[in-house]
Length: 166
Image: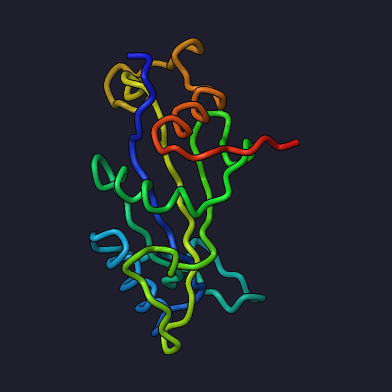
């Protein structure tokens, strides 16, 4: 019950506009993850960026189980992780500036380069208590994942080094 685990990995590409750029981003996500992506929709209008409410502005894929672990084995060696990459719940977020760091991706001038945002949700067994519909309960402080435990799990599982913020 005390061992950390990966609940899900969310891979997101934000392009800021619909059209050909968004289609390219969806194709890249499909190739990298092996799953179909879905479009993300803007929640508000931002006139300075030319974004209207309800307009598709990005794409994302949610990975679970073995596909999440396989993706992280490819992505984490290219990420620069530090203690600030972890939140208070022990979740990890990082970005990759170019999609061509993955082995099956080559640079294509007609497509360009796309950056990826990756969020890794870590938890322990029993964390569903706070989200379930019937008789939900808070997770005790002693059972919550800390930043240090998450760092230790990521370093030992994926053989990467997390830099300190100093």
